Length: 113
Length: 116
Image (tube, rainbow over all chains, first blue to last red):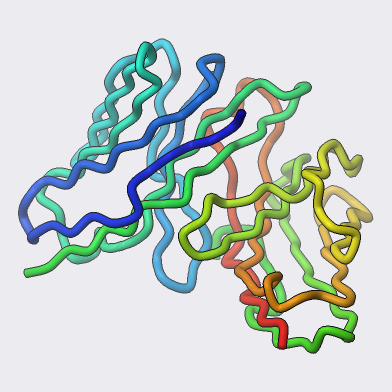
């Protein structure tokens, strides 16, 4: 079945690192994505990782991929109050020639002083 | 603005009403999607249109009826909805080919629907 799972809530102190975890189901997904949703807005692509990579770093963001365990994580270094948002993990199983994304429920990140 | 515009931003409707949600993109994308976002649940993919043809309908009740007149516009027609249909309805678009897959989707800001 298609099921992307994430914990629903994470609270961190400003300046600390945040780690948001995700498990996905389809090992044939070509790309795995992290999206960010701020209040009153749609989802914005934050970063992605190609399935043949195990790590990708982009400024304060580090994505780790463990294909064997189908586990994806997003680490945000030096977390700021502006990082408070809902973070969605998504997989992209092959599906008849178009780019179908399956999302999790989202992890709400709360950053406190 | 992300390039995907949804109207209206908020909608309150009675269970016997008929209304439509509109989505528009001028990004040159050829695939468009409707998602339903409910609290604490995964985003639910409802419909997919690829080059104006519906390629996926995820067992969505017939009270939701999509329409894609061209590759830039997508509608979701609503009639005789239930209170449990209250949610944020998100539209997205993408350039649908393997080369562009790493760009993912571009989402609109959504329509917050309340059924009373």
